[in-house]
Length: 440
Image (cartoon, rainbow, N blue to C red; front, side, top):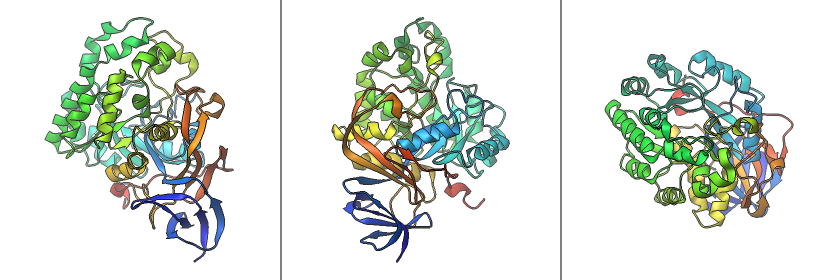
């Protein structure tokens, strides 16, 4: 058998576990795993680990309308430099991605500009609930996103009647930003001018758990599956663990890495995001439930703002931080430090997204699947430097951090898109296919 591409010499992480084997690729798909013969191109992965392609299911690439912060090209370039092969992009742009024309516009903008494979969320509003059942089935659409609490942009569905209407329209799993808007409004006075450490006091634990309780009850009534994004409190995870029949959930590397006691004095408004960075005790609680198997995916919630915007005094400063490029490096470092296992990281970043969102041909190294690989050096010791960052915003809360474990290569559908920090000549990202829309 002759292959277009062969990866050889690396430790291959298959559903059955790690093994030393070659991977043969033909027509952009995996065709064989084992001891293989000739290929048109061979990638020597000696000493490296070949992981299923990392899928980041929450990024904000800001296009259209906010391209001074980021755009589809720069955000996806950061993704592949960090070993990410596919992303789900969020709808709080200008204009919002809340109708078929807006989805078509993003897909057109992405063509031959996005470096990784991609899908786009449709934002739920008070006005489009009746249309969501059709919108969620559009090719290239990741599903529906609900903002229960106000964040960047003006997508907000805060009252139970409107939430119930959204959940009643459609069948796919709905992604939820779960913060209780009435409580946030009532607690605005908890914000202390010039003190970003008051951010988690304002957007407190109760605002998160209250919203999660509400959306679980509404989802059960509607018999609709939901996916709770960027969970920040152990209490939420304990609750979600009791509702796995209807709810999945996401953790972010930021909330698993940063603790408020250090982050706010050191980073100031650069540590400000929604939901907020909380205490070290919260962070440790998230790790407990991650290793109990409660978390389903890791998403970066990549949400860049310029340094000029972040330099505004709190609370005029915007919430959000970049993260798509550092998602995999941070999780590899946590593996190196014994926080979790590589097998668990693989499940959270590839098999998990495939399983809960119904991706076609993604999420595992197996014959017939897309040849998407995140190739890493688990032993590499390095420091995150500003010169490595590709996001247009130009900063990261993790600049200067020493890490163990580094992405070396990103292969997408058999194309070597990144190798040792060098990009391919052209962007080749394509829309992700989903089981729910595979047949139109």
